[in-house]
Image (tube, rainbow, N blue to C red; front, side, top):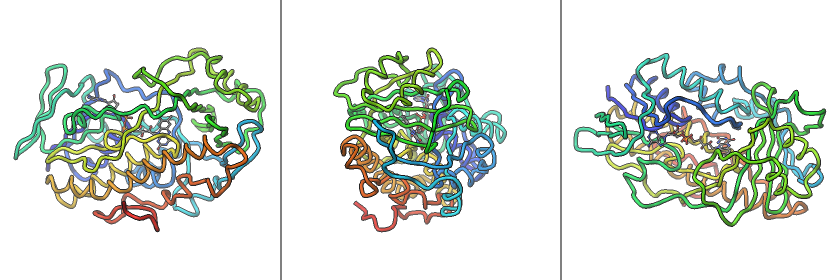
Length: 399
Ligand SMILES: Cc1cc2nc3c(=O)[nH]c(=O)nc-3n(C[C@H](O)[C@H](O)[C@H](O)COP(=O)(O)OP(=O)(O)OC[C@H]3O[C@@H](n4cnc5c(N)ncnc54)[C@H](O)[C@@H]3O)c2cc1C
């Protein structure tokens, strides 16, 4: 069996490690952080991602830590009036064979890490920041800032949207500021006054801004994220502490519940960051090196599908390698299966925010509502989708 080097121990890198271990591969994950610690934020896990997690054997454990929203919807930010309702609760399970759930990122990341380490206690090396990749006809060498060097058969860059592996393959293409600044926070539900959080999973929209909120951690925490159109951003981090008043100043005319939620943020618990994205790559595999998750196709968060694409990638990569063990051709097969679907979702995520922030409250109807479900993304099953076929929703032209 091959030894596969994975750079980055985020949700994508760990999902790939687990998927590959289950196919009998030896994996080594190199993460630059000195300790694991996902940021405090929520994550929507649609049925397509749940299918991937089920293939990894994690569905029961995810359900233990998840919240299943009863209802979903798009609301008017000023009045909290319902513009479009989404069927949640038991409906997605009945329709797609897996539920639609919401989790704390750290809970999901912890489940993935524990499963990888249960399979192989030596699978993860922390405090290893990749600086160089070289390959020859027989293998690939990764070099790290701490002086360590390792050789493997194949290498997967799962090192996020500012991927060092991607920079090695395709130098000089930085992500672009997409024109949005985001804020996030987690509020203990028992610190909130009684609010009518209906629907319990919602995005409230107005021209130029939006506010999403849903419960995570089995309903104990309310996750929120606010997005504001902005002409300028220079800072790199996605965890810059923000004052609550600064955020409220960007949400004038919002329904009073929005301020009530934001004001309940624990001290030091509100963060801001600039949203960056990149155009789809025409190719992302070079010989024995490929990319996965945000390293391959970072996307705006307005469809809630970035982590879902990373988990789908992971499952397809493992299946491709099972079909063509240890071979660089397997990486080509993986990429061919994933390229059009992820490019489609990346472009559709840009379209989603144009409609959320651009239509004005009166103009947003079911016709404009092309969310992940309406686009047909929930029907995909990464564990059984045909390899080599683009995985686009029915009726979508390959472009
Ligand atoms: C506001 C917001 C909301 C979102 N909501 C959702 C949602 O609801 N549903 C959804 O599916 N997706 C969502 N996403 C997208 C999702 O978070 C990402 O797509 C997903 O986390 C990508 O995972 P990844 O493992 O590819 O990258 P990352 O999570 O960025 O992980 C990359 C890892 O690589 C490590 N690394 C970086 N450089 C190096 C290096 N040189 N050497 C070694 N290690 C390195 C990093 O430390 C990190 O651990 C959201 C994103 C945002 C910004």
